[in-house]
Length: 442
Image (cartoon, rainbow, N blue to C red):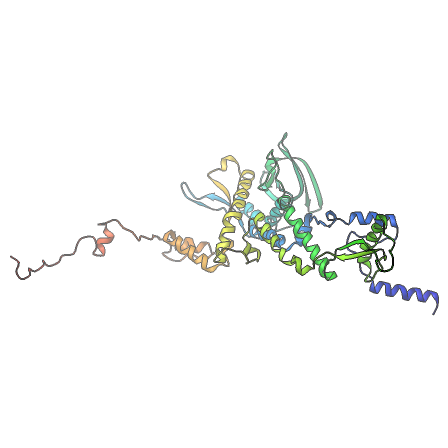
């Protein structure tokens, strides 16, 4: 066999049995570089900061963010008008009202649907703190498109925005856009000047860093069969046959540095006979790192305002029924978002003259589309509180029925002596025969 073939076979077996070094460890034979490498291998270097989309690799955070996005994406935004003087608001399906509702409910722009726009607004509020939507208007000042912006900023001196959005023919940048043409959705946390929102992920960064670091540690331990920490110390004196040469600090330091590198590269390594080692780490089973992942669910659930049971974590949940958790989530987390969403839409798509005549309403009926039992109970309450059958059927796009416009009110209580009680024989005391006298009475 030639020398070249021997080298090739040697390289082949080295690659076959080589242990890959973890991220951040660069193998080197240079002593100075090895020293710098060892300095960087400290606990701070092990902390993982999940910035941006990397945070979605954490299961609990991914579940919570997607739950909020998809819940808001189910909402139907309606442009409504007052139905007569003293009436109620109904969806405007004629003229400009029909065009606006098409933008709000179907396709705000040629690149996305209405539900996608709603979802991306929530995503940007969580990660950027602010979501900008540019209102494109025609010569009649009517909205013709709603463009989700990829960047933006507010100028309080001129009350204008500088925005960037992706149009049909690529990115577009606009400067000095009047504030009435930009929908600005802010996170619940805002800067001191109240002009901009703060990203929710900033608040969650500590919990996410702990979770991401734990994930990295679990993967590393599972890959190596357990993480080892070794104490390198001077070898004891040999009392039987004289003394061995004592190791100085520099020699121990070099041994420790080389040992730290070799552990990631070799399955077997040589240790100088003047040093001794002792395993001081615990195994992954003793540390119970997998159970520590329960921390991330609780902390992230608190930050996002989502019950644990909705994060697919039933342990520690105090809800007797899942419906209670859903109601809590809708009431405490989604309803405030709906109100802020409505306020921004009303302030930018309507004028002060429209107040009391028109409004933008975010309808939550779609959330109960698959909850037939809950919807049936609500429908029953509506009928008992004055709704007509046809009004109820209109919510499900069902045709009216004859004599279905009558209104009923449930009356379990009635005034004493009222006509209702008299019709049942309860208004007046019934006529009874006088009691007969018993024997012995006068």
